[in-house]
Image (tube, rainbow, N blue to C red; front, side, top):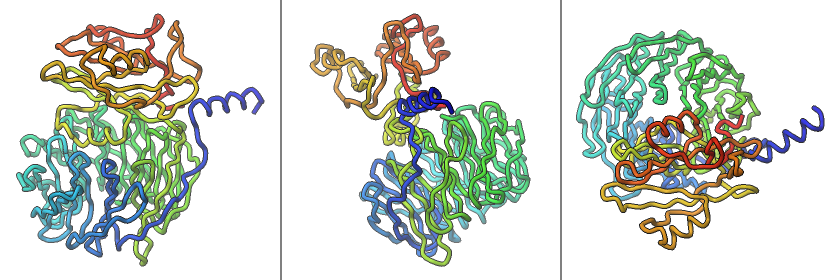
Length: 533
């Protein structure tokens, strides 16, 4: 590499905050025996883990990196999910007859057991709708549990030996694979009726929802394929090849990178599929017996847990190449991330299980993904780069008022040369409607705080950082434009929308929104690129 090229790469690395060191193991904590599930609540700073053989649950403090407590759950606690918006944890107890444990993780209401079908082993939820879905393996059914009443409100017959039910919250559709029948049952979450039974490949294991494109990806273990389902028609529109996997493999869709990732335990690879084109774009060699994949879009990394190698492989999400791997405990198989840490479950053979806690890799350091939401009644847009706010919105804190638009942009989370802090304000001065306002203009911020521009309350300074263009609307090298549009008071309340998508900007202008910014292209701000590729 010549000197000019080397200098350019170094400058870009500094501009984007690119880091190259692998995650560092910070702590290893003892757990119970035969851990089965892991879930997080970033609001409480808690990680919840089930210990199947012991009939207990472990609660880990995600900030102090210590075990807070171990609580009795009853026999056979298996998979679980955490609702960070309401501070509840739901655990399936794999017994006959089975139960769903509902725990108040804030410590206010104790534990409730809801009777469900026989041998429930997995669960899903539409938390916007307030429903929990339990797959009953030996009853060939799904129990629908109301989060409001903690009671079963419907029992729906599905295929033989159903596995994890997965919700498309926007369409109110539930997808339930049956590995025995080689089908996926589609359920209407509003009427609790079966809409369709879709024939897929042999040995379907997990349905990964792509709400961005209205599709579902199902890995067929026996066939070594992936069935792509169109959620509008609930038909298979494509069948793609994958590596050789096992029933321990779960695929994941990431909307920022527009990819479906599938680890293949038998051949030690990760299949990467473009959700735009439904083509296999890469097969990455990882460790031995990879079981699960986790995507950290803010950090720009993909993590793959290798059960046979006692390691985690780190992949750069933009280049889709392996950076390296780091050692964890014995036979790791599940993982989660929260508050800047990775949490990896190690089964450790005959010894008690353990939890490896590691730092995140952050190939793109000191940035975060801002996720956009839309309120249909208000016709308003809102965005946040906060992990906690993003999680509670995804978990339906406002029920079905706010949904993701699947538009994103990347922001800086720390101060630096050419970066300006963004302040966030909130107002309720328009009757039933409210609005947020973001500004990086110090004079504007001071007038809003002082009440010179009345009716706004300061929520937070420096919620993130942006760059500003020159007078001609040009952004600095290595950054991309961000556009801002104003609704011009439509609907009786002001609202601004920020987008990095020029086509979205043009559509909003056509709808009567006013572009605000500098130069002929009306550029409002300058940011690191979304994929930083």
